[in-house]
Length: 184
Image 1: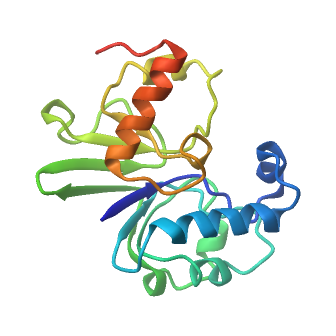
Image 2 (image 1 turned 90 degrees about the vertical axis):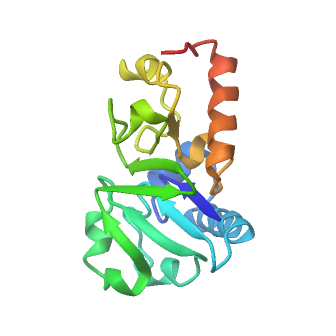
């Protein structure tokens, strides 16, 4: 099975505070527990960036505890910790954009939301991160007009990895709640 996740920010105290956790350890342990409850070592998990940031614990301490065949899409906060590990030991692939095809369902994963992507006009999905649950930036309303674009950020997906079908469902529910969804 394929799972998607973004913006975990393991080890990041500023994000911990915004999320309302008492400590970084509490946030990290909840995220790791949620991850491993859903993802087995046979599953593929696409990480749409910002896996860790300003983490005090070594990156391998996190990576060794996370289940799944990991695919890393590089986010703006990943470069520092990436220099501390041999990426090929932990990831199936690493890139700024990763495209996939599962039984005729195409997807593009990028840390940043994009206006267009490969096979969009043929039903392909865009899975992104970066914006967390931010609804105030000017691009937010535009993103809501893109029916095949989904935010994989933990802040809008129950702090856990989700399947493509769950992303589609969560995004539709979120857009309905905001009253901003329009078919483009």
